[in-house]
Image 1 (cartoon, one colour):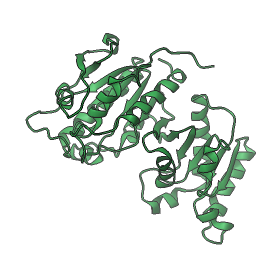
Image 2 (cartoon, one colour):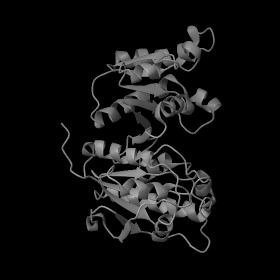
Image 3 (tube, helix red, strand yellow):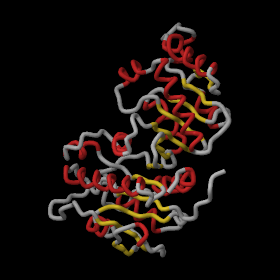
Image 4 (cartoon, helix red, strand yellow):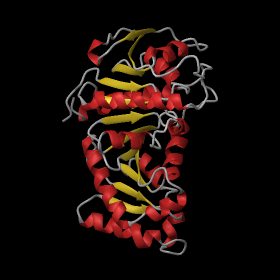
Length: 336
């Protein structure tokens, strides 16, 4: 049984300062949606002061702290660990910048350090920009890879949760052609075992994991595509013989619907867009990413930096709020 944690401490790096991250953090923390968490923001003071001037933004007081235990949990207070890193003379909202990529990375690094040190129960991330990371000379393609490296976790898992449906991903940021090549019996067996461990860590026990098919109607026994026959079905047979409660391959045109109806406790999506389309079409704002297999808990919004609307005060904070709620939900599963 999970221990009860009242008001878990959630570390929130600012994301790319030129994107909507600072805006949605302020909006999310200004209301009651995140009242069950003690949220610590890691970022640049001037960036948040600037974000508070956007049209229609709520009033908040920025309180500078050095450690999470210095936070004050009164409504309208944003507890901020100020790392600086953004030159206000050159900073431009809505623009790709190596400076912003470097600042975003530093905030993620600090957030992970707080969680690893037991000063935070979880890290909850707003969006970063891959081009900005590249411009900063940071050799990571995204959050998952950063968290994997900084927590010494080889190949961490990506799990989406939305309306009770959970979707894991066998492959992520690779081309569709490469993704097909990565769909092997050995890889599926390895991933299912680790997905099972992640579900157990999150307190999800019982039920069946479904393995999605790759080809239309799972290839119709090799009539159009034989990956199911060669790789996926043999992996499922092996896993079942080893005691794992798995089913598949099940056609991707129905497996997500069945999972949403409660038939399966999770689905293993075989490539990026297969699972992203299913979850985001269901509810774009409430599709929350969880990174599994790590010693710490990380939840995240699953949208981008939205440079086109950054600074206008119109970005929705729903996904940020939901990411914090999911962090609160699973915080008892991770020690502090």
